[in-house]
Image (cartoon, rainbow, N blue to C red):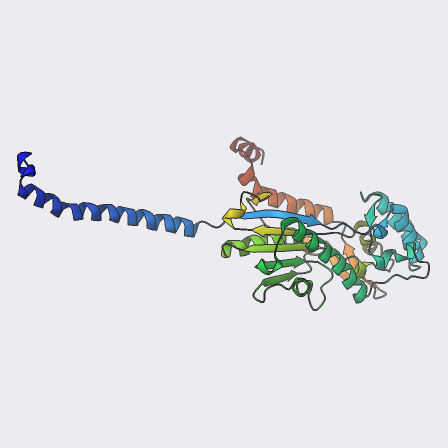
Length: 330
């Protein structure tokens, strides 16, 4: 009666009721398409990679050496000629190293113990590796509150000391990582190994959402002190010092607000030309002593690699007007 009083007939009510399901179905159809599109977008988008924090090795005070200490130690080893000592002394002064760098006990113990000898054994090398790697891992855990059991990926790089079990296995055992942790031990990749490890970690994290990766980068000095007199192999004795770092990376969205950095771009180039391949080369001298031969072409090779990488990185970081300038002068 009320509807009739308002001029609405029963036929109008039936027509409205029959049209409602079609109207609702149309909206649900649109909502479904939007939801599927959003799901595809989220699935296609690779997760962001965040650097949560890092720790750098702080060597013990007794490992500290000045440049004069280094020359004094080289003399005490008793295996170098006067000409080799003078050559390494000149290189040392131009090396850019300061008066508070560090050598491990295997190479510096003679400073404090006259009865000690140069020790390049595997045992001494492992001692250095454990001191450096456990040191940075402990600091990283303390700074981030990281539970080692939550690490999904572990990458350790050390170019010249590659024992069995590996350094990565050493970390797994020490910190009781999960049995399904995916670990990688990179060796023989030189000074670029740290960046290569970050690139590898990025790829791994982008393949598995809600994951954590730890990267440990170091070079172990103990087994790599060259004791011969070939000039091209003596340079290594003056350039390298103890060091290491551990980095925690995450792809968890909830970690974005407390991360120190976000990894935006990582580029990598390869140079397999002969001069690049031989620029840093582990070999033996005529007397069978193992060392690293540094080529005179190493600065040219490094410059070429830097140019190639900047060419790839430039479009990601340079404003358009700067890119135009680069193209115009190329």
